[in-house]
Amino acid sequence: MARSYEQICPIARTLDLVGERWTLLIVRELFFGADKFTGLQENLPGIPARVLSDRLKKLEEHGLVARQVYSEHPLRASYHLTELGQSLKPVLGVMAAWGMDHTLDAKERRIVIKHVPAHFLPFA
Image (cartoon, rainbow, N blue to C red; front, side):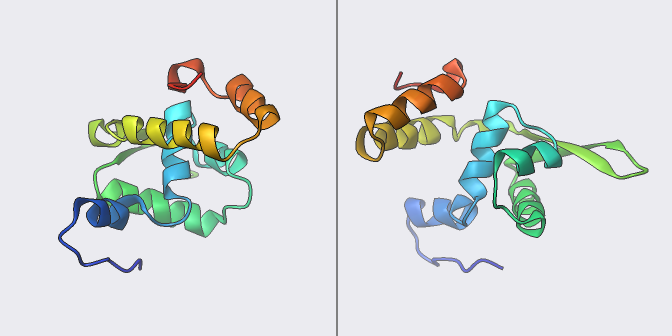
């Protein structure tokens, strides 16, 4: 289980919810349209299945993600951001804009602009 910062601070409390490794990248992929476990795994190379499962469960517990079972045998579910989860879009947009300006070179910026859905590019 992730440790809490145990601070009365909105940044610390937000990090308690979405600050674990992979969590915001999962949210990003849900914004981009991935909604199945396998799609999330494919779009997040290197994430262990156990970690993905754990993060999705935690996002669901905190009301950021809704899970909908569409097959019982075998068990299959789709995942969607709730209204609360959708409210993270401006946060990710600001992080993306900052990263575009301060962490990528010109070639990398062109790659990002080419592959990120246009509706998610506040910086394009």
